[in-house]
Length: 378
Image 1: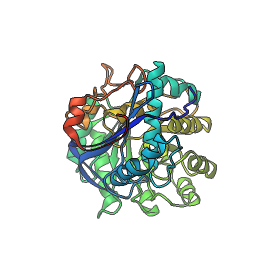
Image 2: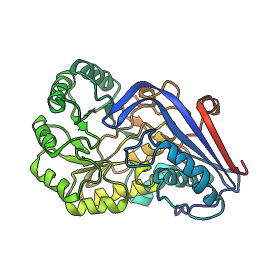
Image 3: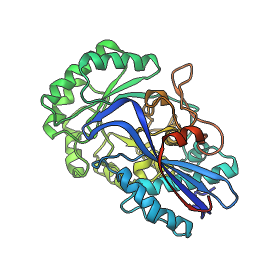
């Protein structure tokens, strides 16, 4: 299979809303529910492909909002796919990526091939059956005691790294991070990283250098010139990871050439879908740059597809770090498909079977669906 998108006979878009186990609070805002769009692609032979568009409800991230993705799918991208035209991702990159993922899922299911196996062959990387994961403590308001308690619980469930959220705009942000990092280190013996979601100044990022973090993710805002990011990298010893700054394979290549990063957060929804994400992992590996699959609070369908990307790269020059994708139970009480779980060794089990290895639990999906659009023969 070469990844060519076939023309569907029908498309269905389901907007879902599901409560989170705990609120997600980052420098970009606060979420108590996960709103996402589930896509169903119906091929001419009747085989169905499924995918998820895990955009965020509020503006400010590197992709469109959920509202924008929903409108784009229903009015532009979906009709274009039904007409046999290549949908343009301009203005709705995550929606276009999800549509491509749904088409690929249908083709792989028709051929009985696993997504992780297909991606490994496409990217020229080895794959693993299980993946180590990092527990993201997704609340910028956590105090030292709360963070330590959550870290202990996560490590007991199998996490091999802990990542803290940072809000550079909060009063005393740098000092607070130092206190939380110290408390977490006293509680668990695993590496500690931090994610600022682009909220820091250069001075704040430099001030965090003394904490000995495993890495600092997206310290400066997306759109910061590559030269400025490279300058910060030279001024600090902490490995710098880029997330929101990397929106395509071209932007990753430019960042690598500029020496603007030590690590890259690979997110399929942000970078063009699973196939593009696999190529980003391959590019980083070729440069000897570490990478990891970041999370976007995906529900089970999107989480399974992203985990297929995270399964790549064992033994590659740019070795993959623990993924931000944790078990489903850390995020939702009931997932929309068979949940993603950790094995007895604490590592995430990569789904097997054709396609992403997951199909929706229709009862669970219907229960959380708040809006629906059907196009063509579905």
